[in-house]
Length: 360
Image (cartoon, rainbow, N blue to C red; front, side, top):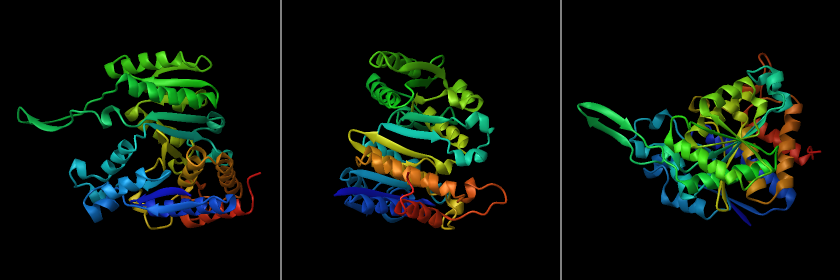
């Protein structure tokens, strides 16, 4: 029996996780896999009930699970809360509590969606990028941090910090991932300005010596942002820190046509949490408009990395392709003037493709 902790979260989270859970339950039925889905609260939903974005019972549920599926957290409803009581703190604390230090964010072009990309088809046709983002360090977690009054003026400060062990373990994760791909790693930093990333470059270079079969390139983050638009197909694995990875992976998502298509896996010490990289989109919450495919593809990553079911991970991805081949689109990936379907219908279409064996 595999125990899956499900945190629907806020905004569109409940809708997209419901669609993804339908896919996961279908896979379990077809594969003869026993799973136990248990729901918990995190983010704004947890704040409303418990006054805490990550109550202890939710953390314990996650710690006791074989994998975690997360929808999305946050929304303007909770903008007035103090910093430590924001919904996003629940997500950060969950990542830290599970020691999920390696965030894998694939950005792959589905041929059926070439026209949805804002870039010309010839620029994105061969794009298949994996962003490996360090997840538990950097400026998001560094101390000291805060806002204070100095000389009568408000002054805000955060600390960017990494030690060599944190850098080394995420670098090894990137090089290992590259071995299963095109064997190229581009490490992104700002070593010409920031001492923290100067150390990053030194340690990554040292770790590269353990992987002589993988080519390493270094690139400053501003250049990397430009190159993702100018020539995205040059990249295979992009290795970078928490803040740079947050920004670059969202930029990479737009190459695919919609952030609603990009899944992610957060891994560390045998655990895994799986979530779409997009936010809670409160403006469309409850309207059956959200694209659930990023969450469905996150289930595929869960099958691959946490449930030892790589064959079924491939079949979920093939089912998504089959649905796109039939011209089914949610509003975010539909061409102008083309009819779209809703969240529930898209999830049901993937389920039907799995049941009909559309994975050849």
